[in-house]
Length: 429
Image (cartoon, rainbow, N blue to C red; front, side, top):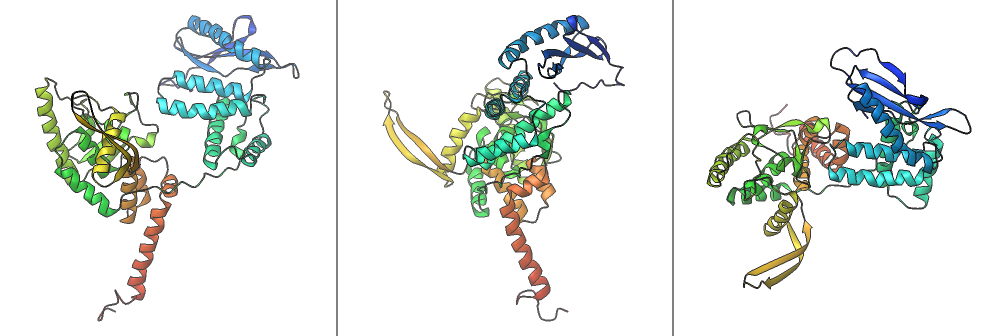
């Protein structure tokens, strides 16, 4: 769906009408890339042809014509259901299916997108895509608020998806303007994040030092030291670790389906500095891991995960989280509401825990941000380390830490200027 830009100068686009005048084929890159757009028939009210979303195809012109026919077949069910009128709901569904077909979205992202797409289908199923107005959108949102069907956060996510859908419609020249751009909908205030206190973070660091190094302990160490996400930690490989310059590069993340994917935004691709002790820990772990892999007749390579499991392979995120909950509970950072002790047929005693309450891995990330802001680090530095898309997002999420930092700043300036009985020492001008 994205526009294709040739590496060199873009050649003149050749447009031809498709067979029987039912669409158009635009040559973007000679003999290699085409954009196709079938017609959906005429609007009975305006007698004008309705346009389908433009789609990019790869191959020669014959392949473009073949893809045009396939695309028209694909659109038939939509045209029949909606009376040959392209609606916002129908286009949102097409948009979602095309995004899924790209293969670069995580299962979690697809699952989340599906929720908002279904809402758009339901709310705007009869609205022609070229008829959507700011007033219609505001009216729908007002009704949702009145009926208490959505929270502020859910409404914001719904609007973000509708805006994304209509932005694509503008790109594909189906509509000339995105009405969502003129809808005033403030971002809901982020919930205050939990984070470890400095005392708790220091205690966790001491506990990690006492543990025998392994992949899972290393993941916790890196999370505490850098604030990276769980998937980013589990996706790290040795080629992305620069121990000479004490830094790591976030180039990929491990998803729940055990697939390595690129981070979700350009800002998430980033170098993160390491403190000396963390760099030393990783050097020692790299050598210990190499020895362990040799015993399993596995070679350690630049593509070897830093966080390996007992078999020397990548660590399943769900298995890691189960282990991490137990580790945190055993070290005072959480607890289980229920514990059941049982003995299996072989006579082995087991403890089954459920109902975990306490800190999670992501809150090591919040700990990093809160401690950095509290120590006076500038917001841009915190934004970079966390991989946020903007400094305003960082400020919004960690407003509580910034407020506390402002209180410290007020006390500091008060001591420096007015003395307050502390800094105005005898003999100072």
